[in-house]
Length: 132
Image (cartoon, rainbow, N blue to C red; front, side):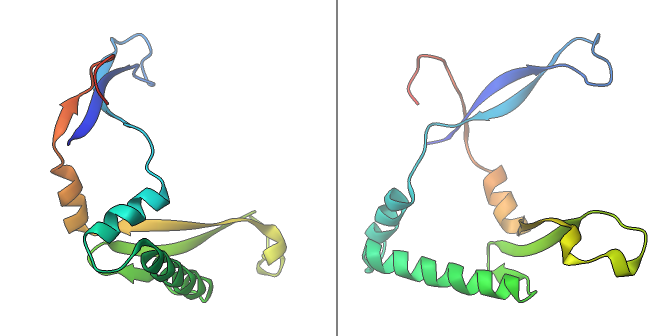
């Protein structure tokens, strides 16, 4: 199987009168549930889907605990999870308190070798009415 794409026209935001250019845009085939991914993974190892689910959830709990404790979390061979804080700007350091918090977000930085693997995915042009 390959990654589907469409050629999508876009206007230049700095020059709306310029001719549109076409850019590749991925076309999603559909949705795979967590359960279906567990079942697929279980076909390749000796663990059953429930055991994989328990392991994934235990890992996620440990990861969130480490993130909450202020650590970044590296998933070897995949990338690094970390957090960042957004808050209101205030005039003095004393005013910079958790009450000024807007949100805490989690980010993921993919490893270069993973990015390279994704960049080597095979592409196939999506044809409306064709098979997804």
